[in-house]
Length: 330
Image (cartoon, rainbow, N blue to C red; front, side, top):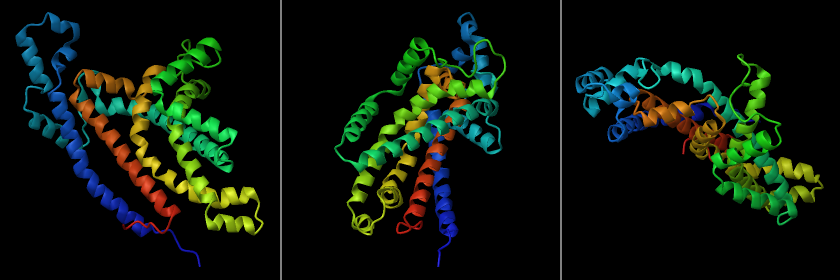
């Protein structure tokens, strides 16, 4: 008799994580305001720009009042939090636009890049890991393993610059950056797809080593277990043994990577977006940090923290589904 999916246990786990997430997000947002308040950057001068160089102190003080940065740290944080809970994330002082509009215009492109890169990392890392595990110590295993350790130490922005030099400058087969061609004023699927190739490949390859190493080790260990040996003894084909038995066991450790790689994926995405001029949230994040844009900084930090918490929850749920012995109530 087949056992249904444990929706109740999954719901209880998600509920517990949600209760845990609320205080975490509160602490994170307060930390953002505290760090921004201690920053040497002056938000008033950043907002005023070159006009601030000739403005009188009275005008600068009035601008400080208008921006609300004359208030104590706790007051600024509480004022932002109460408005955010009502759906008002405030206005970006550096971009002169509502924060919700800034995020809404950019988050979709960042999500497209991150999801595509993550798919590249998982599919390519899993495939190479399984092939390398078939013959430990073989040519493919040694070459792929060496490349994985090299890529693990290579910064994402360096890989991006190298990819631009080779594929865009030297070969001229792919665009160097942006979302569309320079002469185009419309966004088309073909242009977006061609401009997505390099940044998604670079970001995916930068995350690939961990998936490859985990899958290779997991499948290698699974091939030495008694159930897999028994499957071979029953005369099952090597393909069936590898994909039907060893891969399932070997994939379990990799599922824990999904949550732990989210922070690295976010950080890598910011660097890759900057290198390739991808219209995601990277530029907004840099501007918010250097200009001490409290509202935008807090919203982007909450977004990144929520992505990490969701990634951790997803990895635990997938692990529980793949291995019923773990369960969801532990």
